[in-house]
Length: 617
Ligand code: NDP
Image (tube, rainbow, N blue to C red):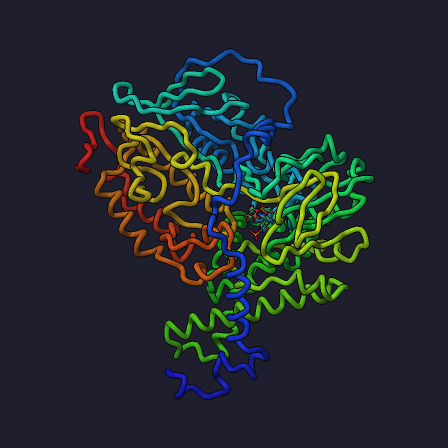
């Protein structure tokens, strides 16, 4: 249908019907984006080393581990004891594996939930679908959006339930890994002097495990106290994740960063600091949270399979499945965009829309949703100028949406000041405090809520010496672009499995993704052991086929390229090919299920008399 054929009543772009002019909104989005693009892109950030090397110290342990270096052999070595590593361990235990060792640099399991203990921390995905293995453990979280501490304790319960503490090494970092062809095992060393051989090695280091600091000029000259949100310094602030930070009663505090973390800790800081300055570069989308305690009657009525049904329903709703939308189980603000899309498409006579018109419908749905988000700011923030500055002007999916009911009202307090840097960020930091628009804000403490080097902990990006067959490293193998089968295994790296969001599916409910990955990896290892294979390794041809398939299924997302900068689009410099399987995790998980059912194992299992040579036979 062309524009001329379409009746005005059905035109999804008609400004009169819409109540706003899409072209004006587009122009505003472009202007806001352009003023934030920086030539240095991701290089604007600093790793917390040098003067900031104290970030490497674990504030939650008070002693070095009391153990002699290990010289032994295990069946499976898992690097990283966050949800990914725990799920891999759990799924392998369920398959009967006894010899599993987790190696983790923190003092306990939990991953991101171990490190991120800032005040106000909670999951932003409903906890009934975010926490995995709920039916296995017979647990129902206490609230719709559980506190970080409840989640951390739950990760401990998983480790206990599946006996994963037994051989675990905490406060231990892997320093090298190399494939020994004669042993057909990985030789792994650690910073505690361990020499471990392992038949299978699984790396799950998490996308958010390396904090980053902003490279603001003068950051190292500040005389007051600083810390990153993932290393919250309660010895300075007092209190805990629920607040009560009496140490801040006489302190002027600055928070730099208003992403998903910043918006969760601001209300608690507002409550306890003498004065709080919130330095904003780009406002977040902050939608309604509507948290509530778990209804015991609802919990008691849950029937077998409820968890899988609920988390699949969540993704299907976001993916636009009508039938699943009609029984939206989670029913929170995450589903709003998909519901707006459905509504706009119906109004526009969906059956007749071309692909291009579908894209327009998506855009209009996004405009409508963002209008609601901006109206919400106006309704909750009393000062009109502050409200205006807090309004986000970009498409909904440009940044991780956030959900909080205390964030906007915090700006109505006389002891909270929003310092809107107009998209430029903090100009510099002096020995007294941050500067914006030439004004110096004298503070006692700066809290950096500036996020993480996303993906920097993948073994191919972390700098870890990891040598596969013939001494080839993963970065060498990936020098022309990532090369994997399903994101997990690579040719030349037998029995090595990498978890995480690369060349595979992705979803906002990241533990769902990790569970699909753990299930698949455990199945490959189980079949390998059961069938007496020497190792699991895709042929070069199978790997190439997946690289080609990913080129077809991922492609370049032009909407994301036009987004305001952030880690989603490589700080706005992203003409990179995305590495996510489309349309979503549900389809990717189905692909993995089919692969298993159709005996894809036959293509990756190598038997003792065989070898996958380098040309891919
Ligand atoms: P983000 O990278 O999302 O946010 C960093 C913030 O720092 C942004 O607001 C950024 O502004 C700001 N910033 C960076 N440099 C400067 C500067 N020079 N001056 C001023 N501001 C600056 O990190 P988060 O830790 O907030 O979140 C990371 C991810 O962790 C989330 O996307 C989410 O996936 C996850 N998370 C999940 C939670 C959950 O409940 N499940 C809770 C918290 C986080 P700009 O936007 O302009 O770049």
